[in-house]
Image (cartoon, rainbow, N blue to C red; front, side):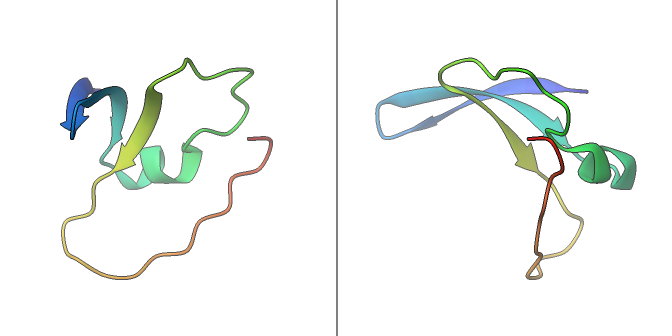
Length: 57
Protein backbone atom coordinates (compact mmCIF):
# COMPACT_ATOMS: atom_id res chain seq x y z
CA UNK A 1 0.00 0.00 0.00
CA UNK A 2 1.32 3.42 -0.94
CA UNK A 3 2.37 5.74 1.89
CA UNK A 4 2.81 9.51 2.04
CA UNK A 5 2.66 12.35 4.52
CA UNK A 6 0.18 15.19 4.74
CA UNK A 7 0.41 18.42 6.71
CA UNK A 8 -2.63 20.09 8.23
CA UNK A 9 -1.86 23.42 9.86
CA UNK A 10 1.48 22.57 11.50
CA UNK A 11 0.75 18.86 12.07
CA UNK A 12 2.33 16.25 9.80
CA UNK A 13 0.60 12.89 9.58
CA UNK A 14 2.02 9.75 7.97
CA UNK A 15 -0.78 8.11 6.00
CA UNK A 16 -1.32 4.93 4.05
CA UNK A 17 -3.39 5.50 0.92
CA UNK A 18 -6.28 3.07 0.43
CA UNK A 19 -7.05 3.52 -3.27
CA UNK A 20 -8.43 0.22 -4.53
CA UNK A 21 -11.70 -1.49 -3.55
CA UNK A 22 -9.65 -4.26 -1.90
CA UNK A 23 -7.68 -1.71 0.15
CA UNK A 24 -10.94 0.04 1.09
CA UNK A 25 -12.41 -3.25 2.33
CA UNK A 26 -9.30 -4.14 4.34
CA UNK A 27 -8.82 -0.66 5.83
CA UNK A 28 -7.26 -0.83 9.28
CA UNK A 29 -8.76 -4.22 10.20
CA UNK A 30 -6.71 -6.52 12.41
CA UNK A 31 -4.07 -3.89 13.22
CA UNK A 32 -2.59 -4.36 16.67
CA UNK A 33 -1.39 -0.75 16.82
CA UNK A 34 -1.13 2.42 14.80
CA UNK A 35 1.69 4.84 15.46
CA UNK A 36 1.13 8.31 16.81
CA UNK A 37 0.49 10.74 13.94
CA UNK A 38 -0.23 7.83 11.58
CA UNK A 39 -3.46 7.02 9.78
CA UNK A 40 -5.15 5.98 6.58
CA UNK A 41 -6.61 8.14 3.85
CA UNK A 42 -9.32 6.58 1.69
CA UNK A 43 -9.19 7.73 -1.94
CA UNK A 44 -12.29 7.31 -4.13
CA UNK A 45 -12.55 8.08 -7.87
CA UNK A 46 -15.60 10.32 -7.36
CA UNK A 47 -16.94 12.32 -4.46
CA UNK A 48 -19.80 10.67 -2.58
CA UNK A 49 -20.89 9.88 0.97
CA UNK A 50 -19.60 6.59 2.39
CA UNK A 51 -20.12 4.73 5.66
CA UNK A 52 -17.39 2.63 7.22
CA UNK A 53 -17.14 -0.06 9.83
CA UNK A 54 -13.89 -1.92 10.38
CA UNK A 55 -13.91 -5.18 12.24
CA UNK A 56 -11.15 -5.66 14.84
CA UNK A 57 -9.89 -2.10 14.59
